[in-house]
Amino acid sequence: MPARRTTAATFLVLAVAGAALVGCSKKDDGKVSADGSGPVQVTATDSKCELSRTTFPAGHVELAVANKGNKTTEVYVYAEGDKIVTERENIGPGTKVSINAEIKAGTYEVACKPGMTGDGIRQKITVTAASGAPVKTDDRLTQAVADYRKYAQEQADATIPVVEQFAAAITAGDVEKAKSLFAASRVGWERTEPVAESFGDIDPKTDTREDALEDGQQWTGWHRLEKALWVDGKIGDEEKTLAAQLVTDLKDWQKRVPSAEITPTGMANGAKELLDEVSKNKITGEEDRYSHTDLSDFAANVEGARQAYELLKPVASESDAALSKTLDAEFEKITELLAKYRQADGGYTSYDKVTEGERKTFSDAVNSLSEPLSKLAAAVVVK
Image (cartoon, rainbow, N blue to C red; front, side):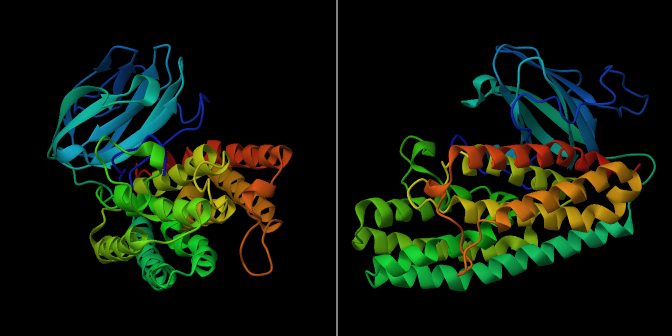
């Protein structure tokens, strides 16, 4: 989970690493068609967040973002209660990016966050009920969404027994056994993290790191227990209570998967988010800073991103054959790279044993996949 994220993103997340010019809008001239369609221009500066229009129809929405400030920024669309509908992170100064998402009718806020901190500079928007011709659909994408929901449910279902074993080891005061189960207990979550985050209230309780806590927020979840196991080396009554709470919270996640809002663009955006998770938190060693099990999370993120892509591939390859060919090759390269660090017991090399040169190789592989992956959402928009 990103260190600065204090509310969880929905599955419609689309992030971009660094200040790279990726996913640039092909329609950034600000023109709007007679029916109110066309990209919504978002101009972000260090003190403003301006939209070309604040009312537009529901359905596919493209936000063409231009950062004209001096600080790296983020752009969010918030529903009621600050539930994140879609976002784009790490938009560097002078960068133009495009966000493709499906947004339902309702009232929202668009927030620009110069410096990537705080509540952001906000503008209210209204998304009206779609009118005119019925929205075009593709049966292959409908099936992709159904298959991905099934995958997400399978991952949640498989997570619970391992988390229960992890919690049982903590309850028994068995530090070493709990350590051995920590990484495995996170795999299903990491594979489908954008879905898990879509519920807003679960992620802060289960996957927040100490430096991401809001004022007054109690630190709970995996990373609180990780610190107890690897830094403190002991288990007390508080840790036993927190372990039981982790099981309860993750069962809540498991139960909610059938109601998660999943769309084709959301699947594509979520795949990109998973790569950004790797770039920002796993490559740096920030995520599992005490246990150094980052490569396990890294591999799970890549596996989840690839699953989403493979389900969207029938449409994406038809829409953009060159993009699909590139994604096939890049996913294969990063999978082969990770395989070199796989241990006989199914785990991965401790990340504190990975050299700076090797980390640079990982970073290059992630960046090489991340750029074309940022174009996947546009490739699955039904024209």
